[in-house]
Length: 262
Image 1: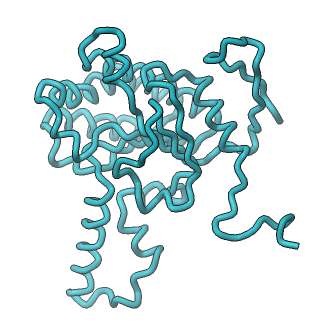
Image 2: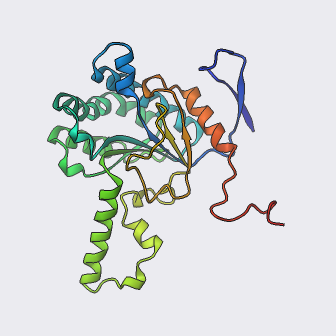
Image 3: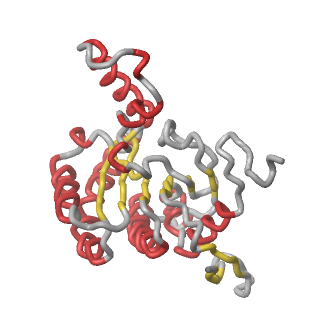
């Protein structure tokens, strides 16, 4: 089945694209970029962009759930973001508290379960408590997983995984030859998202075209879509259009499509 969507960010309102509802990415990861530039363009403090971005998270979560996405991973705060000004970091640490307090009832209503990956023990106590409450309150939801990467960095994640495997090897619980791709994947922070641990589609907003230490192991075969839209301006129709771009790709995973391998 195909569904019509208007592309709102085009001047021609009659421009449409077709979305194949049978080919929805099962795991979509998003680098939510552009909050600061959005605020700067409007002569507002950077935190105004983060505040607006929180509302966009709500809208995109509902859109993804409605389309049948299994996992939506959002890069909320990196291990490098601690370098930002203290007042901005403090505001960003308060956002999960505000977001979950307001949005958890809607998540439950939409059967969305919250998961948080990252070094949660390094978060402020109030942020840790808000995260724990949201995970507990949505634990019985069986629909889409809303997975926040919070105080997350992919290089640190890989190092932690390797250290854990090395410790097992040191204890005689694992031999080097037993360390396979599956074993390493199961040591990653995304292991509990199986069978959807690896994103099918990675979206980055704001026009930047880099990965920024995000899911380096997991995106080995992901499709990338870079959009110029700043995150606070990102609408559900932009999200749909980026999925349409994904659907136009030919995913071969290093091999050949059967129709081409003749």
